[in-house]
Image (cartoon, rainbow, N blue to C red; front, side):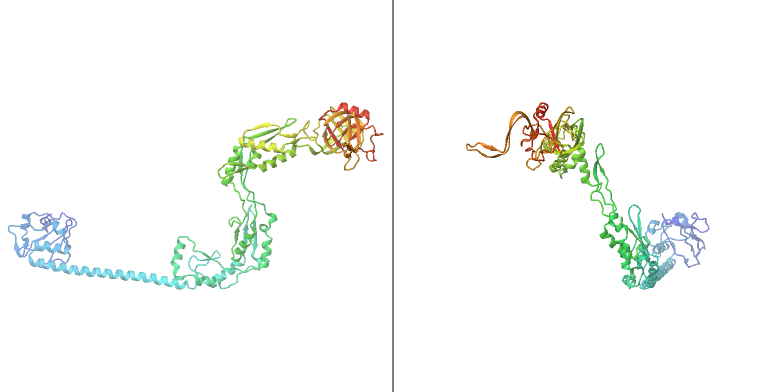
Length: 611
């Protein structure tokens, strides 16, 4: 914008409400600073030496109006432009200059030379004043900041000096806040706290036990520890403590020791339930369990067994430092189960076991009874390898089969039975008759089935069988020999078919009739019974202990025991077998009774011999 547009007569109204008028005495410039920029209205008063007309820079003015003012633009050194020449500098050029230079330039254009020089001098004075003001302001700031810094330093050093004899901010001893306290004050506080001290021990199942300070002569006795803690603190670090306090951060807890009667303490600790092993409940590991459909993990039982080797030091530490609580769980003082429900190996084990759940081996045990071997028992034999393969422990299978056989085998086992002959109850043991599982064959069969995971139903493999199942497995047809009463009963269809007196073997180790349950191994007519070979004849034939021809023979053992007629016996029954007339182990009968028995018995018929 041309500077012509910035002048108008003073008595004309101003279009800029923010303009400020001023008048200057003749030959003088206004005291206010000049400022020319591109936007604000600037008032400039100048008094013409010829016609006392005042003008101000405050409006728009064309070139003719400017000439009418009587002010001749200055265009050079003491020269005028002809006919109202335009001002060389426009508003944009002036705006690029600093304040003083802009004023000088504008005035050198608008007013005579002497006036411009006055303006320039005024501008120089203004610059000096501004510099002085700025220097003054800096001085004030330095003084202010210096004062503040001095005050802070004084406060810092003052508090540091204070904390040489007092505990710093956020200081704790044995859990008690000792901030701002002196050594004497802290020791007094600790002594007061000791008066009502007690340690509460929290155990499982909502059980708590207490050690009272009065029971162990608990007290605080100053021993220099508090002073040592104060000496160790750095008093110049108190701002750090303050910051941690404001941020709710713990700076740490110092510890000092209390005194107590050790004998009384030891007795009190020894009497605690949590230190009495007889009152502990042992921890139990998590384990797999069959719920009727599948295997699942049964969670561990943590128990209440305390690690007493760790318990006593923990209690001692708490009491020594005046701490009032000890939680056995929080301090991990219980002995934990080795296997927990989140055990990966246990989870893998359960997964593997469930693969065997559908598998079952159903045994037909006779008389409508069965026994089922399923995954519930099989899983105990399995070992899961690192590659997830399964190994069957053969020794465990053998042990199971042995127990299984013991449960169902009757051969040679002790059995109670009721005599059909006289109604009394007897016990018999031994013999060669009864059920006996072939354990070796059974083990191999089970291993093969586990490998294929194919269910089966079958009888056990037997090496010996009986007529029926149960302890009295000889059925309704059997022979009973009662050595004590020297009597024989032949039972057919559950009823006594023959009852006869007998003479059994002499009661000596070599000649006694063996007891137990046997079977008829053979029946034969007209057999010669011979004893052991005692020598040979001249022609080399054997000489026997005895040779006795009999008409009826029913063998019981392969060692020579059986039923037969004994015509050399004058009578039967009573105590003849004890009085020198006992046999070599056979059951001697009269000819008629031997004939009757021979007609009733058959090979495989059970024989029960007992006292």
